[in-house]
Image (cartoon, rainbow, N blue to C red; front, side):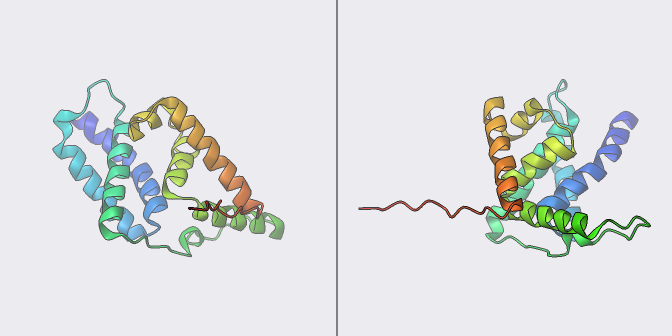
Length: 170
């Protein structure tokens, strides 16, 4: 049991970081992590022994978020999500700061699934297979969705926001 406790303690900061990216509110993120851990412990007997604990916990957390999001039908945005970091001695150039802020604003403009994919793959280092298991979709679907998320991020970062295509209904 100590081994499981140690594994959970090691994964909690990652879960919290991911939850903050979804909720954009540290307090809501803490609540989401706690409810996800409660659900995981309750459903521990349903966990596949050969499955990856990290992917399983991220799947629970993501589904908990989606369920809460659907129930509330509103999504809170926090403008200062990325500005809460402490000051370092390192002072980046104005150009780097503007590019970073632009990229973060573009990231905020992505939909929830695109942000989740980019975070899981790029930040958390999950494999395509692990993300496919979390979302319960084929690996090819993860790859194409990730490609679209990266393309959308590039377009938003470069200011190339394309208007949605409108269909004429007869």
